[in-house]
Image (cartoon, rainbow, N blue to C red; front, side):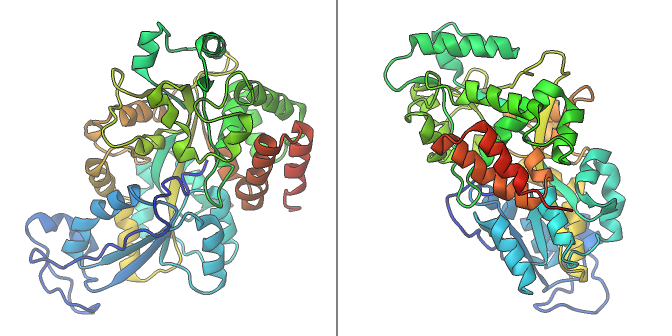
Length: 454
């Protein structure tokens, strides 16, 4: 899925430097072993994290501006009150950079890891620290599935941070209304709508647009498309067996799913609206992929909830706005409400008190509420958040489906696969498939061959 590298306006995030304010007593410029100060006023809510003034906690992740700006704002008061500086750096080559840092002895104190597969790879190095008691105690804030994705071989390592809904289709309500198009509620209706749009569109306009470019993570949007079809065609059990490689990419079920994707997003009559032919999907960044919707050159874009941050400033995102989204229907209507999601997990490579204080804070409903207040386009994996804080319609839509007890919910499959596959061979194979026309059979063989032996 890769929320990784999704906001590629800069390669390095802004370091958030805090000034210790008067609401914290006994602060200093260096870590102090003195008695824990008593925080007063509005800072009293951070008392549990006090006593580490002057400490700096480094954090590394794939989140770039503009969302990294929101991250820095979300913990600004925490920094001011506790005196702990959180120094965040973002990279659009995070997946390749983190192992280099860790293996070179230059690991950050904390990393925001979007892939359970990469988490497992880091745990295997022996450098990941188990979370402190405060973070473990917060496990009641997440459902068991989320805790499972932050665990390796049954041991809990990383608390979930954010959640995003993948199963969305973006469109223009104004364009739909002008052409009397109705939002489809079944796969058959969506395919029929695509055919209807194609028959009326002229020039470079097409029913669908897409792009899979994303720096060193290029290819991930196409893995999402396949995941959506597998989950929406076969349900959770086949999806789970596919993640574990009990069901291989060469399995007839996955081959059929790939054929469905090809009929949908490699159909020259349907893509790539406002951009070019099918092959341009491989060379178009995912950030730019949906912009033709605003010019009525593209009817629909399948992309996650976090795509909201890519619309230009001033774009109204609402059911009666410039753009909005509907839930991607199940391919097989017998599959109950399939929902694919993704997220991020706070992983520690240090266990000093200041790092653990930040871990505890980021696993709390208190921090989640703060992040929600800062800016829209973000949903928490924490079930104890104040739901009334979600004022953005896409956030509300995401929270609704992610919390639906009837949903067939699954985490992004490629993120849960071994990193060599899910954030390596599969990305490359998707580029070959869309950009070079490599056959479905050969694409599947390429990915299967990359699977670790053990």
